[in-house]
Image (cartoon, rainbow, N blue to C red; front, side, top):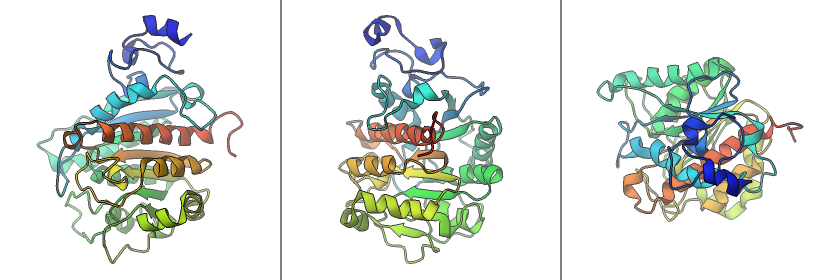
Length: 324
């Protein structure tokens, strides 16, 4: 069936009539959407919307993550043929997942971006869909979390990152990707006792009570223990995952603004994400993919895989007979 479909399928981002199911158009051709999902602003009956926020004006070092959503979408075309490996179900057939496109904004009005991001995500949530957001720098997670807190109350947070992002910053007008979690905690949209940061390997003495599973601890204790610790923190609460691609070692993801050696290998990240099956995931994001710093495309490939795993995680408890 797949070979026959490959002969006729093209531009599935626009020509797809059934929003569910895999896609078989050539990975190297056609209009690019995430996993060949349909581009649409109509969220009626949609379970999950993938959307991009191509904003990178809050970085402390190397820019370029404004190109992240586009690169992640392109990298995802190779993953659209098959169900995600190791999950035992196909979330693209069990759920209606769409590509909602990118958020529109005027780059010259940086101060307007936080409210725009919050409103963009809030509009999707109000329609009854969850979100997987493609960044963009890590600042965008703060207004996303505000939108989620408005709907669910303070959510449990799993942060994959090389940096704690809890450096002190009490100026609410500052837009900084290194202080998003500090502000989220201070504003009460997440709580330290239900927040866990995985892969940390930069020094910051004050982590504001957040549970830290740093990279050496993950390497030392292994995947199973790491998963158990994360699940102990988040429990069965509504949970959001933010995945900064610099959680991965630069050997696996060099295309990012602030790379730090000693990070997680891609296989570790994949195993941890799959081990989290059963958490009450309500949304997630992949941020800090900066394609200009990676001529191989490996970082965007990693970002696309992370986003695909988040979709599978979201669908796991929502599939027929799901929950376990």
